[in-house]
Image (cartoon, rainbow, N blue to C red; front, side, top):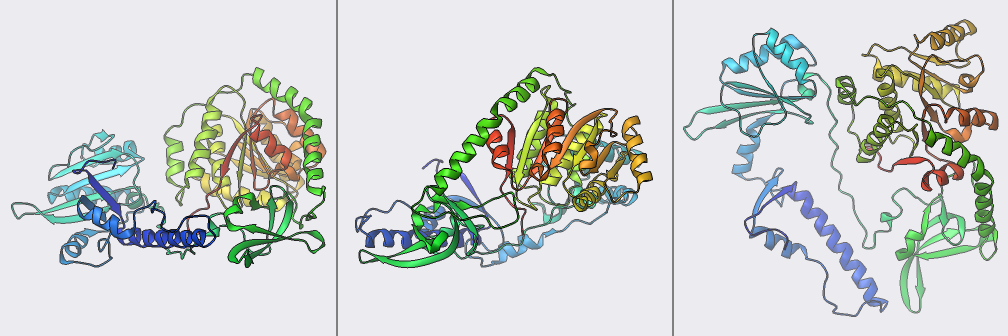
Length: 516
């Protein structure tokens, strides 16, 4: 309805698309049957969606390009088999510059077309120039390159290939498309495709990360323990319910279509939370105590953040080639949430208002990489970075991670915790004072009076809720002076409320990395 009859429809993996459509159709049919049995939907009511047969019929009448192997049914034909054989993976050079220039020259001599797409176009242009091959850097490639040519494009692609095909005059033509994955050895891993089975009602839409035994929170009834799905007969109709156990053996049965009233419990402590009792004012009392706690600190927070608004902070420079190189060296595929968080942090740092941003995401969702990008941006502008963590073990883990990610750059990263000897600690403290240490990662030892920085620009705080009152008071003072980035898997209600009310900025990473 929204495109013309002559439009080109491009389908990525037609066989998987049809499998998904069939699953969605079965899910919709199952939901419709349940609603008809319960009397919530009239029998014979007009369908509100196209079925698979209708979609196939519509596609057959259109111009369709299917990306994949085997069309809509996964069946191979002679034509798509021949086309698939025309493509081959590109060679892996692993950053060996002499081998790169040699292969480019060899391809040019053989009359091939070679297209190099890289984040490091200027660097590669210089390497080719030294090998007597002059290539201009382009931002895009609007037309196919001519035979016997080299093209250099500033950009990023996941992976390249070599394609061999026949021209209209019968000559064989070869095209090489090489990316950073082939040239410099980094590549983003390909996700293995999985076909998930969906039930007709799909309560997992709401409970993708909740299993039986987990604690959940109901909007009206409070904290309970999720027991799983049960079938109950009500008014002669059997339905599926979510069973939640509360104190004193109370049970709550939530209809599946009201699953959005439940959410996974997220708490600051590691122990089990106290479940509420149905039919009492326990949950309302908890909410009232939370409101009073927020009100108690409101004046202090208003004063603190009013001071921050009046202070002009350091405005960091836009990203340069080094930041691009760091991003290119990340060995995984960033999630959309991760990229949005990185962009938000960098925009904050480039403004003249001191940053105070909370990055909220579960363990393993990529918060540390956001911190790596922010820390590197600060250090390339000549500022020092301090990362405060609650435990010595975590300090060592972050120390290894940051050193591994930033080892190729001329910066000095140190740690400060009880794992270091007094002499080593003294050396680190001296380096912070004279500016020879660019970044320090440590426990509350960083907040001691003898630790002074030459030019601190960014403070990264991991799991702030695990620090004591004295440490939080010191952090409160720092917030008026430097940019602050807080990482947390389980922010305390006060921190979360501050973020949601706009006092602090917040980025959430809800999407796990692929295959996690």
